[in-house]
Image (cartoon, rainbow, N blue to C red):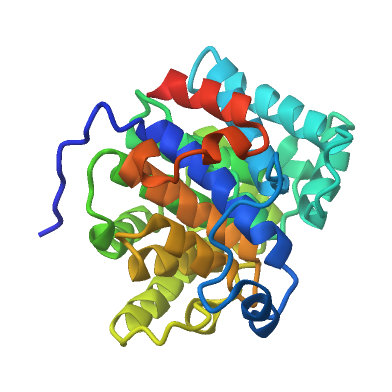
Length: 339
């Protein structure tokens, strides 16, 4: 039986999740393109466990997470015609920002270039991409009060689809936002694999045409249902890999060996969850584990931070970090509004 506990209203779970996203991103930023051997040589076997710099700099993961968060906050209604223009504008503002100098993903840049021409987003998106840029930025969707699960799914898939049109990018983004949502609402971290599997099975042939329009026609599927099912099947396959890893003793090594390097959406989520579930009682250790990987370390660690922050709130993070992280003012404003 999956357990749910009543969330503590004083835990500031939305703030904890947003700051956790940024903390993981900052810890993984300097290690993203390093080998595990080089990371442990520099930081020790536990990996990086403290923020570096004042402010501690983040990557495009946090920048685009903030872009999504502000669009959600500004939207007058949780429906696609209101939200899509705001997401588009925020993404385009990010694309031309002088602060967009943190090795941004090629898919996001290509899609933003097409969006800037005014094309329909279903035609501007990179249809074949399921890169982790689809879900590194989606976690704020799981924090918005008042979204029912259908709305959460639609918003999560829409924000992904503007740049990453592959069905696995859509499905993995929904699962990522759903993970944050159920943990924020009191689900036990250890119940996440079962909850996510149930969600994936239940949504497998649900194509949200009110949110996605004719996006499915950009692929090679014979129908909308066939299109989206392919994405959910890949998510279910990586959840199988997560379950297999969790059934084995923890060897303390690179989680990417079990669940993938995280450059693609479903692997980024699974590897982040493996870090979380290896260290469910030690959020900083989980972020350090995500940063000590051979893959997309900042994205893995930032997703782990968003999930753990939704569970523990601000109390899960070390004192003083909130004053040292880049974009602290924006994270605090958004978090306070959703707490």
